[in-house]
Image 1 (cartoon, rainbow, N blue to C red):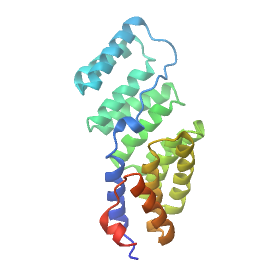
Image 2 (spheres, rainbow, N blue to C red):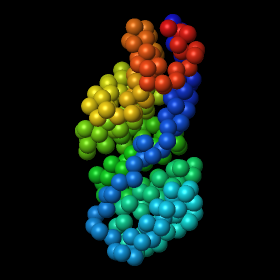
Image 3 (cartoon, rainbow, N blue to C red):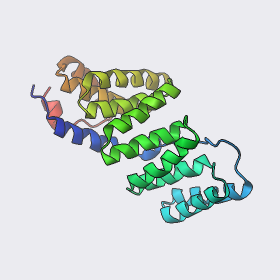
Length: 222
């Protein structure tokens, strides 16, 4: 079986990973240090409505006004980062997410968002550091392992990536998560590139069962 090139492999993983809905991996969850004022919360809620309608400039203006009233409004920083990420402006996303993390270092929402933004800039090592921090903070959070596996496999660190993906698989299975199919795809890719034909076939079948599309040229290689 011919091993695919690292460049092709990177492009394949990159395209796959960002074809998912960002909301699956970029959850908006409360992580404020304290309750914001009513005025700040009102502006934030207006921003959320605009974000949901993809009206990013209006949303960002509301988040910025909320922060002007309450400089510790962590959710507002996180949503600014998320909006800039979704608008294709990763550098701006990174700026706000780093502020969020300076104020709340254990914020896994900001860490996950920051990891994805760092991936967009091509800084795989910084992205990996974010995902490993999530694992250290929330050892039962499968997203930390899953995203770490994506980056490691993209970097052709296949054995290490496989181990992380397998841990994510255990946790997703325990949670009965619909993300299990995506995880099986990662494990398939790792085994395929490790030239473990029998295990690659096993995960190929699991992917098909879960309606996860496998590139035809890879299936033909088995």
